[in-house]
Image 1 (cartoon, rainbow, N blue to C red):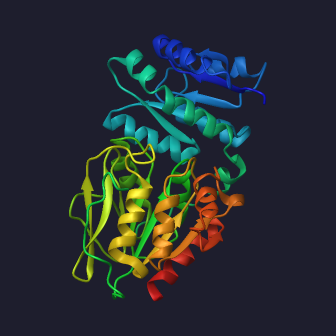
Image 2: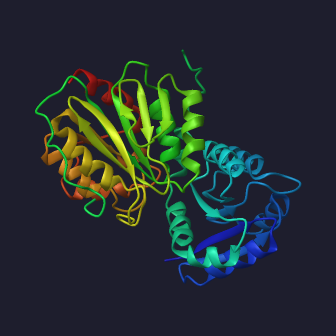
Image 3: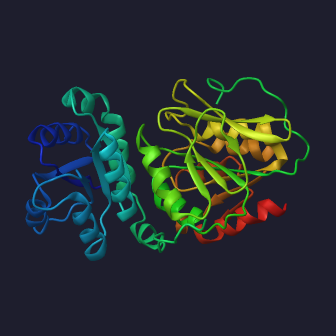
Length: 354
């Protein structure tokens, strides 16, 4: 196989050096070059276009978001954002994801070299996932802005699911390409819809900005989950980065627990943790949906939901940015039916009437 050709664009010479070193150490990746800003990058990319671009967002002459929008309109190319762990950085990075970036790799403001080397697996995984991204689908998943109207290491024994309740819950798991897919789905929902719990693989501090952005676009309420939040109609709760989220039952109502714990399926939050807790707490009162993403997180949990009587769906290959997680769930027999992205909102509404 040909190596993945990567261009690194960051105004920090230290970051460029460390990223290039980490990426070049993998035989599956070839670093085409580095650039201090997008204008320098464009001049280099004219000679040979990369398969993936690793991009900072705050740079001189042209910021990363402007560059990203230019790329997506003229020559769509997979982009991995390398951004700092700051509140300002989180908000800016959400704009980049909305503009078409595939995923995020975080960098701190101190001990940069040590952090990037320790996080090399995350960086390499993000670049390899980006190289397989369906850019045509990523562009199609954009939606017009709508005004707002008005895992055993973590799971503990809990109450068994009730046979049937008046409240339904929809559990969604996604990763690479999921920010755009979730925006498509959630902005299509009316205020009257089932309660939704979501795990989107995303670093700590970025989930709050992501939830805030969606809350401003959607008719439903979208929140970063807090321990004890109730799952209720017209509300979507997104698991906070760096913490697991579990569904629990209190009488005939549902709530979430936000807990610490080891990574499950290499992720925290983990889709498997959410899905398995949903199987135990809600059983046939739940709907499980696994969407675009790399890896197999959520496959076993979705099968447990299926075995508990829940309706289960997987996003189909044609509409996924990365057909990894749904594919693995399907191989396990966990997916009752595959759906294109555009049919998922309607399926969520059907869950309310089930």
